[in-house]
Image (cartoon, rainbow, N blue to C red):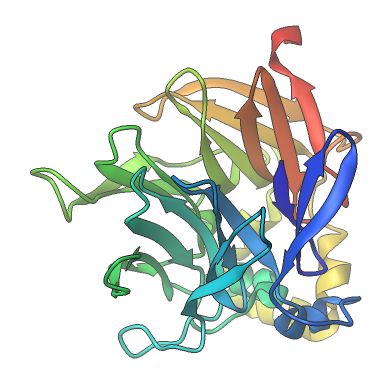
Amino acid sequence: MFTGTADGRIIKIENGEIETIARFGSGPCKTRDDEPTCGRPLGIRVGPNGTLFVADAYKGLFEVNPWTREVKLLLSSDIPIEGRKMSFVNDLTITRDGKKIYFTDSSSKWQRRDFLLLIMEATDDGRLLEYDTETKEVKVLLDHLRFPNGVQLSPEEDFVLVAETTMARIRRVYVSGLTKGGVDLFVENLPGFPDNIRPSSSGGYWVGMSTIRANPGFSMLDFLSERPYIKRMIFKLFSQETVMKFVPRYSLALELSSSGAFKRSLHDPDGQVATYISEAHEHDGHLYLGSFRSPFICRLSLQSL
C-alpha cells in the first residue's frame, strides 16, 4: 500500500513495515504553514507500468518509480493553465493506457492549508483538467466548480466523476463517445461533503465524506452558506484550528451504484475509530479508510458487515 502523509512524504506500507519512497519538498514539516515548502501529496494512482502518479497540493503532478525511487515532475503548479495558476492540486485519475490524467485544481485563490476558507467563501474558481502524458498538453474540461475534490474515471473510461465538496454533489463529465464534452449531475444533496471517489467491487463507487450534513439537525456549513457576513466574522475572531473543533466528528462512507443510487453507508457517529474520512479504498475484501486529520489508516473487513 502507498499513501501520502502530512509531512510531505510518499510512504510504502508492507507487512507492517513503513518505508519512505519519495518526498517532493523539504523540511522542516511540523505545521500547516510549512506545507508549501514541504509539499502535501494527496491523490495517488498506480499507472500501467506500476509507477505511481501523484497529485501534490502545492507542487503539481509527479510520477514516482517505487523501485528506483526516481521522481519525475510532470506538471508544475507554477505553470499557469489558461491564464490561471494552480493553487490547490488535489486528486487525479488515469486511463488504463496511462495516456491521460484527469485531475482537480480545487482553487486558483486558496491553498490546501486554507481549505476551510475555501469552503466558507464557497469560491467557484475550481477546475477539472486533463493532462496528456505524451504531448504534455493541459486543458480545462470544466471550470467554475466550488471546491472540486476527488475524481474517478468510469470503468468504460467514457466519463469522469468529480466531487464538488462545497455543493455536496458529484458531477459527471463525459470525456469520450458521442456525449464527449457533456456535463450532468451524477448525484446531489449528499448527506455529507464528498472527498475522494474510488471504485467498488460491485461496479459502483465509494465516496469518503469529509464531514456530514445533519438531517434532521443543524448543519453549520448549510446554515452559513447564505450568511456571508457571519462567515467573515467567524474567521476574524477564530483560527482555522478553533473552527475545526466545531466540525462534527461523525464519520461516513457511502457506496453508490454505477448510476449514482445509494447502495449502503458505513457510519461512526462519534468518530471513535475514524474521523474526517478523505478516502474509502476497497481491496481484497477490505475497506481502507484515510483521513485528512487522523495520523493513521483504518482497515475494515467488508465480509463482517
